[in-house]
Every structure is written in C-alpha cells, then in structure tokens.
Image (cartoon, rainbow, N blue to C red):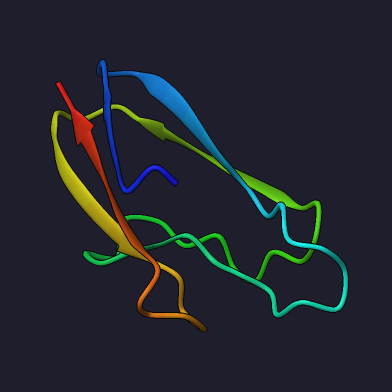
Length: 73
C-alpha cells in the first residue's frame, strides 16, 4: 500500500514485509521484468532505484492479486 505511487526520477523505493511471522513471504516483482525482490519474509526489505521516467507495474508472486504501480515523473 498504496496501490499507486508517484515519484521523481532517481528516487529509491523500499518495500518492507510488515506481515507477522508465520505468514507467507511476499515479493515485489516487476510485470516487465525490470526487478524482482525474491521472497521477503517478515521484516525483510528490498530497494530499487527508479532512474527512468515511466509507469512500472508490479505484483507479488505468491499473491498475484496484490498489485501496484510506480509512476516516475
């Protein structure tokens, strides 16, 4: 959350798994193959720097209904 984020070019975005222990791992996975966090368990984080302007949609591999978009301006 949130589902959509607007950021300036060059911004570093960090995803953090805030779920409690014993909950399935999550990922931040680009729909276009630009990045993939791999499985993140409770408390783990992944960071990606957005150097290019554009619209970047992503999802969670184990939970494909979890979706978001980063809009780089």
